[in-house]
Image (cartoon, rainbow, N blue to C red; front, side, top):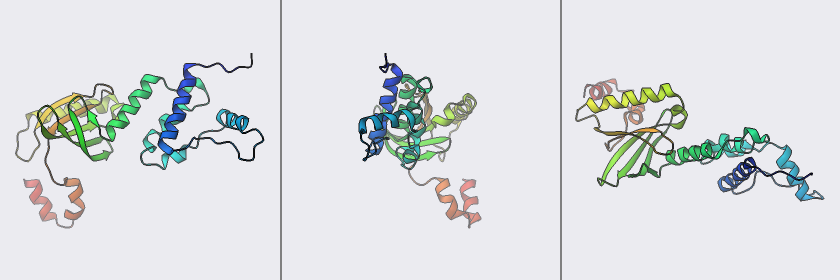
Length: 212
């Protein structure tokens, strides 16, 4: 009687605290230095105060995970996510930052990480060649309709053969997150999106590119 009951949701909360400290270098709550009982003060802060998520959101490496950690630190234990969901979200974020995709593609450069698509430059360890990976972002992949559009559009590249269009090698899904991605021929150089601001004042140059 009067003792706290430890549950799996308690472990989720503790894991959220650990992730917070790993990302920021400090805990989300600290006792008041002038408190006569710092342990009780700290316990009350965990029980009553909302975590300062704005601090996470200001960090480029932590911002994308702020919503997940916030849900792990929910005061209502029933609102905390389960371990499989947490693992999936963490894996998605790791993929977005690079690392290994599938069992054979080692990301060497994050080309683009915004909007609907993530682009990576990677090394195919089986065929020993540089390739490009075009992956649907986690936010869009949660929408079945957007996933279907990505897969349909990606499949059409298999029927395109042109020296200026990268060859599609395969269409795959990441094992843990099930995020779909295209494995394509890598073309070095700048993308049209990068060059567009410089070419926009010269429509004749843009027209020449489109004619190719």
